[in-house]
Length: 518
Image 1 (cartoon, one colour):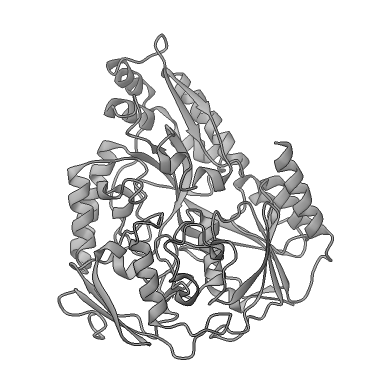
Image 2 (cartoon, one colour):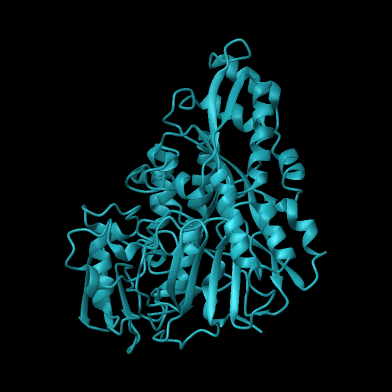
């Protein structure tokens, strides 16, 4: 704890030593830092955000989740011929003249190297979902990619975008001779193909970025971008109030009311595709029993939890498909019924005289996490479940060898971030249980496997919508998680900040080259 306090003090001291506003310098206040700067190995939302600063992807998403060209010149569709009529071939045309920050050309060879690196068994790739659907890929010339699929799979379009499993092209001229890239210096000190260069990474304090003069869109408007790490939400609010930071993104719900009282700050908000949930490790003793999982779902007053701890600012969730998506299912929420929950636990052999001992884990960065865990602890204690709280820094909780991906947790209280496409096979299909993917509930269900795979194998929206309704209905029945809310994100932004536009999907750094501070 003393180390955390010291880091917060250091970060604030660093920020507060600067004037309240510095033209051309933007200071982001962030609670977490990346667990890697190579998205192949990074599991955190911070990695997704920083990745968009450092790398050019084939495609990006705009603020509303529309896929837009980045390194590729056109988004492929069946209509424009980029996707073959049978859905098995994708042709991409790349921009000429794009280079890495060391001056080397960025070509189709870099994407082909990345494709092979993802599937290299020596690399500890966090997930090869989508990548393993590719039967073959080739580059008939440096600026054309031809991707042949084993069968139609919408996930392949997702991996050509950004965030999650969409790894950007990596520099073949630096990495191709290595037997693996697990510990390559590049992972912490990368060269760049994106708008910014990493100038310094002071772990626990800040990442400092400067413009990439080789960026294909032209150098960004900012002279410097500082990712200031302030784990404590109260300290983040204090830094915004003193104008030691220019942007406080995704403000803790306990601080939202205070934003409007800060002079020189404008308040932005939007519904974003971040879903908070109580993840359940179905491979753990006790939790493998459906009756126990149902009792947890019905034994916690989720509406009261949202109204009190989270001040009612978020939308209660019934699934992991964004409610604004064309694929959103129609499902009822779990009813709050502690009597039925007690009866289920009794039939499973648990109760006040024979309690079930479980742990719950969240990140230490937000006080609301801890408050929510205390509410859950109280509600479950009344049923005969002894819930212990064991929280971690985000970089530990979501690390490849951390509790979630190693399956050493019981319950986890966290937020997942969706991409614009509703494909969720990597989260629920049993083929993607770690280390093969992000099915960290260890769910093995034939109906979920069938429907998630079928929905990913067609580009027809009507068919996919029907399949997602069936899949999400089944997920609700087997309870690998309890979906809690879709986040309404609030931002405190300095009046002198220009170009910052919160995004519904992936992250807010999607257009960081347009940011400026006047």
